[in-house]
Image (cartoon, one colour):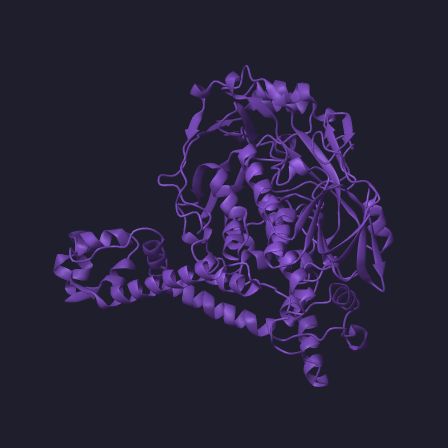
Length: 623
């Protein structure tokens, strides 16, 4: 059997889902090849979308026309903005979701796509001619001719699950791994590495004493991820907080030699910022306790996810340790935690478009690139699909730089710096995070989504209207003045003036946009996101202006392009290490060159001087 498609998306996880949706909506014919059609979009770890910095990614995916935010809003059962006590740059949305509903909505979205066929199979080989991908071969023997392929294999490549001394070939519990494809890619010249991730136990809520825990309610009112959700969301569930203790830690320490992480059974490197409970107990021995969040898996189940207790310890040790935790003395498992060890491909083998450097028209997206998390994977799948379709149509590549989006920060980190552990997005990774806020994701990226064909005309016009209203309201606040005599006494320092603008008042930390109506009774605030956006822009105006100036300086280096095929061996005086790293990474511009680990300022200066002297500086336009 032989079929022909524009693009094959290999893998039905979160990267694959965004890739197939974007490619189809952009008009490409797409084959989604996945080992289990019932597992498309499955939440293999926690039943939640968003979180610290991850919420930014979801908002950006939504602004570009992706689907994760819409799906999370539909399946969400509790919504919360994290870091609300801090500045708006680090506010991060999170939604607890109904796991089954989320999967159902994902599958519905994929099955309704035009020009798309879902194939239940696994890819075991790819064929290349003259350095270009031509077709993929499945386990069943099917030959699928494609112009491009996006490999989004998740944690399934040569994957092994570990629980204590028991090791089972699987990408998730009960799901077979993909065997052989990594070896085929290695034979083509790719470097393959090994990583590890883990998941906590699922427990029976009927066996929990919630009176010994602290309830964690959602926000009121809840805030949606997507501008398409029209606020039609509601909180329907509660989460619960408890803590480990010395008795729990002691059980783990006494059995640490039975942990695959510590007895040498697991070879792959795990995530430093999301360690297992046994890692926490050993590495942070001085801490008397660690927080555990019990999160509902859905509305029609008593099953709970124990966030913070990722473990590959034997089941009996996990159970004994959890039963020492307040409120969990009689806890029963639905399923113990486990670790997954899997193959990944160091992402310095990719171009910033996520196309591989070795094979033309082959793209990698998601955990195959060494990332962790649904949101990081989804963003990569979306970007890979946009670039794959654009290349087929001879359109420019779509690359977001570090000043434009968290997505740009992540992909630049991956392809420039690489990874030696599972990569997770953090607000601290973004140098321009005051500019890259959740509230302005649509302002930063909707234009791009519209140009790509992922944001329809109606939505694009609504976006324009929103920011026209924001601009008008900022102008109104700047023009409308109030006599200082009417200002509350606690702001008596202002009473020395005759009158001040409402915009001036809003810059005072203690005064918020909704307070202006109490100061000036002729003023009626605008409810919702318009008012919030106005307040943030005015209150942080000075900081934002300074950051925009920094971004302009950043863009000057990014605009100095390095010609494709530039031969670094011709440069006299360049250090051997710099020559090797420049030749391997192939930076697109001077800014990217400067961010390569181990590259010095002297290396970059020498490169700039040589480029200018030889007249080889490339064009300043986006790729």
